[in-house]
Length: 432
Image (cartoon, rainbow, N blue to C red):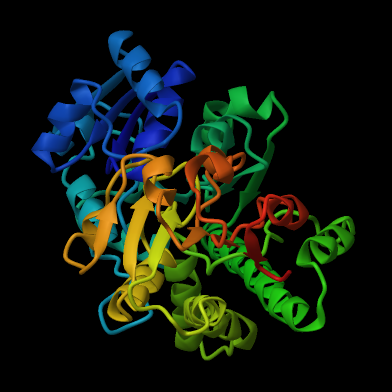
């Protein structure tokens, strides 16, 4: 099939590349000329394991192309995916749908035969209705169908999630589109993915509800971890004990920093905003947002207590600053609050992240990027393991430092407290 992906951000690029790898002819469209030129050279704008290899392979085989010409790309395609950003509006919790509606308007000018227009961006309920109204101003209803097909790609695991999805959700109000899309996804369905056909509005809400529930699980175990610290219990035992209940499940029950990234923060807020619009009180989700917002403040206070409130001139090493491993995404990462907090208190901060230095910290006093784990740890008073990169899971701290008073604050609980303590270092974890 001939596909057009509008937007070469995380969702559009990963989805487009993976669709081309399944044998489809795909063109990824973006207004950013430099980004398109770089993609043609195999230069990837995001960090995602395995993505560069797939781009080079399918571009070479001419199943994948990149363009700034939206009109030509839409006209030559059978299915158009809207994969643009839906950030939170300034001074509001609602989603900014400017790019989505703009894409819909541009598509309406290019319809020359029947097109399936798929919204893959995460959007509030009724957005598909609005896109349909926009396109109807310039195109006859018989020439297009607007569908919701939400993505469930985890950063760092996106390619695997695309190829082996738990489910494929297609929300459409006409059976013709459902049949075509079931055929498009047939290579994945044959591998065991469940194909779920719903009404368009239901598909839109499935995405938001999924992210809100996962955010709730993270926030729940973080709050249980707070109680564990007060009662001398290891939260890892609690996670295992409740996670083995099939009604609950073990995933997303890892205590740590606040959730961040491109989805959970903005999507939980947008869901609450949508509920308010329909005069529905989502008190549980509101509590999740509030608790998560307070999480970084709580961790900052914990660092202060660990250092006995003597932060000035302490050398603090951060291992990892992204919101999670296997991504370069800094959006809503706890480090964005923790590092400025310690900097203002007079600490000298070194940080190492496998994805390189971050522009967010360049203007902060006493904050510098280290080129290696060893450089970051050397001479430090405390090492904060902020992100669970595999690079950090088997560090020989004795090899990198002579400081026998070194404190290790393991925010991801990737180390055995007993082993660290046997090596003579002080250890603190989350919920331990």
